[in-house]
Image 1 (spheres, rainbow, N blue to C red):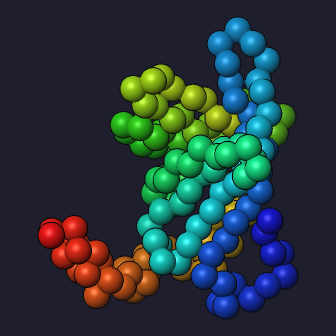
Image 2 (image 1 turned 180 degrees about the vertical axis):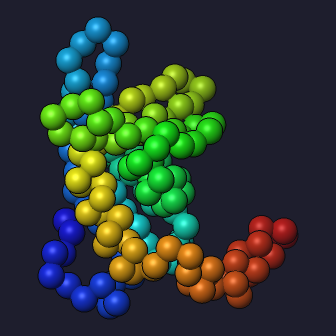
Length: 147
């Protein structure tokens, strides 16, 4: 759960619990617990974890900028698309996740996404992500894979 009154400069990660409404063809949406997660050690990415930890989650990792831009305009190509939904009483963000098995349409309250992104921006301001990458570790990881 997110910590509403913590000092963001001390945080290295942000977790925000949300409810995701899964849109199914010709059926009412199904609500699932989910978490949005951000970590300073992977400053360009966010993770959307669907389901409860006790029953297992499905994790999708994609660009933080994609989620941020998706609050105001449709963005993305390939496996992840983010689309603002303003035609409702409560604005939402639709995240379309595609794989070879098919596609999932996930709606999250825009206010929850905006609150999450505000906290991530306090941890790593947009445009400063490169300052938080441990290049020595990246090189070590790449070299370890070349054995």
